[in-house]
Length: 441
Image 1: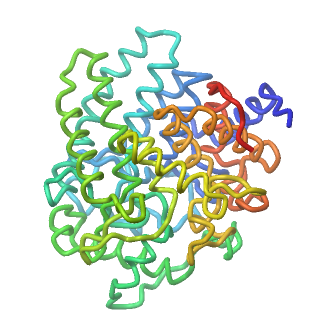
Image 2: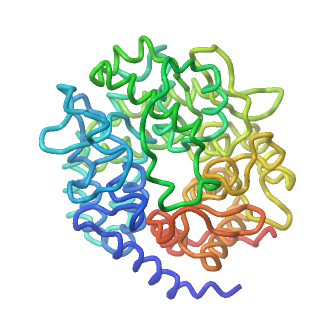
């Protein structure tokens, strides 16, 4: 199929212009009217190819919401937006002495793509002097964020960061969180009104039962005034998430690279990376299955739910060559699980999983950001032909079905909101960097 790259890039840029709030970019026109953490990082990566100044501003805007303890929040609320649940009046983060002054945010974080995005601004900037000045500005803030993760979310001291809310994982209703969530006892029925279903059909979104868990966990954290350490001592949901930690591994490498550019020591980031890589390989690898799983720290067990998260260890440069080959050859390329013969790779939940649902959020649909990370990981290990094929599949999907939030892996139909910013931004990145090699159809 002729992708007409110049036309597709212009269409993608139009999406980003339409969602531009001035200094930040909302994920979509109506469903997500605020600034989301990893969304803005992916957006900055795309923008870095067309306007590095605006890409830098996207990151600065996100960092306005950084907490005094270093946490970069999942959401920085747009004071001019309404109609989103849960809004700042639900989070009530002002209860915490660590919350930022003059900015309203959520009380949890997001997958740590921030350092990766900041390094992309440098890599793609035509003006290296301005880009270096930007990195000098944000380096201490990103270092503070990583230190927060290792000091306040690393309870075992092994380098595996704990996720305490499904929203923190980025993959809200992914099977590991539904699996672990089954054993969480809700002591009351939370009362709330969902607003997402005004924009998206219920069959494409997390269930009401999922939302009960999401809101109940939020309220438990709010009850301790967002005290991270106090909450972690009693948290009923604690997941050492393979995707989150794999992204952190790559982010530490990016942070070390930034340190070198701005004449700071890379050692803290390099040490953190070594710890996390070692812990993922020691604790999250299942030798019998030949793959990585997230770990339920409360129940003390691997969550053996087959999801795309295992392949993001490639993005984090976590496995050795033998494990990487096993992941790709035995799992990723399996047409009954992740590379459907007549569909689109890579479903976020394995096709043969009992959790699989082709139309529902993270239970099966293809997302451009998760494909993008898998593709980058494949290139890390020299799987150039497979990466080229995945790139072609992803761009064809967007060209055919539009800049949707997510897509049916069997039919290519788009779901969720339209004009979705990270879909547009990462399309720009995919069209700007062409991996060589022949397609694997």
